[in-house]
Length: 426
Image (cartoon, rainbow, N blue to C red):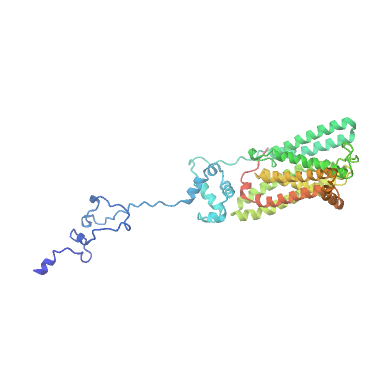
């Protein structure tokens, strides 16, 4: 009978039998809270397993696990960029402008920024029947409009110089004043619309115009003033002729005003080709490598065109073509304008200001050396002009500024963010 009594004792189930109520007594009365952090369910939810329906699967634990979605978090961070983007290229350019690189995109399980931008663009919430807005196409007459406006400064400058050669006395002074005003307004019109216009008016800095006017004025009068100052002059104001004690050099003005047209076409070529390469590229490094030769080629093409204009303007005005100082000045102005057009306004203003300040300092030291005991102030300028002539100051200052902006442009204008928006029409 003792063996039969053993059958009534509680114990674990034998084989695959289910746990009964007496078998529960073998379970430990205390539970480890560290291994089971979830709260204990009410007693009515813990029914004996023998009473459950066959094939019933126990419910999962109540611990909630949220799926990580880093792309969604990135979209929330750049919500305004995603909402106003008309294609994935704008998102890719915006991400690059905020410091997102291909290596950063790999953390979001994408091979490059373009692939990440495509997913973000595809996940933008929009109405199912509403098509994606496209960028407005260029109006049919826009290219002809800005091309004609780019020719206007050279035309008016040619007319002004012709008037100066045909007039004398006060009439010449009136023609010069009216001509300068007309050329300035024509240049302003050429820069207001077309490839040379800024896409964001808020980024325009008025200070850049002031330094540009100084550089152009120095190209006309600066070398003659420096030459006269080194010899004890000038004794009179310039009369608008190249043979006066303070001569007026008109060849750079004529060549640079006509160069507005090739500058506009160079900016248009750079923007259009870079936009195509942005569409075809599959990575930021690939895009930068393809745009850098385009930028350098466009820059070289402009300088070659400016040199040709100088070769024609010099004999026309009976003046030797000032190649060195005019080419460096043209390069400086073109690079400054390209950077400004694409939204990089700080470096052009700084370099233009520094170049103008260097030229003004060179002139000031020559006049300050006339004071008693201040002869040493003009020693650097006298040394440079003795070795290479008065044009050295303009060539060195403009050439240094153009070289700095060229290095800066190869780093900034090769970014996708610099070409995200289509160029403006008229």
